Image (cartoon, rainbow, N blue to C red):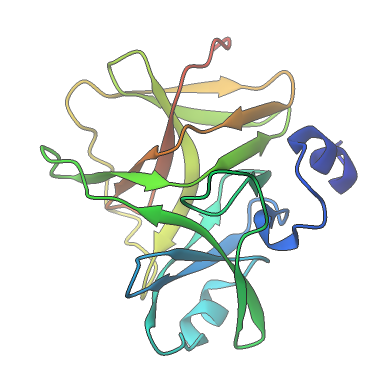
Length: 209
């Protein structure tokens, strides 16, 4: 079993950059967005959907969603748009800390049942050995890994909504024999499904199914 210190060492991030870290495991995290720059500020600690619903975004910001993380841990190497690694900007909202970790780009065209868009972030992910992960193969030699489930803005997604896959995309599952650390490219490619599932990548993983 991995201790928090084991995970910090595996991710190789600067421990003192406290707002760059997501160390709460597969719990709910919330986001708020800057209306002027579309910067995404992620809660530094887990937040329940009920507490997120009660959160009051400051002037010039809006709540952009809450979801259950699918990473055991993660680290943001640098602020969005920065040329070198460093601590992200942070602020406190209703007594909770948020860090500026990402900025979305323009959604890709040609998709109907899913929003696919670039997200500018420097995101390093940790998945623990023994986890079974769903991967989405996008038909171009690359895959997307799970980012969040049960994501929503104002209310829980209807569990009866079925995920509709784009043409050429397929799903597979892998069980990790070892810890897995992934550096996503920047920009990352993020797929947001109507049922609340979110995947990101692209990555190429040579792992047994």
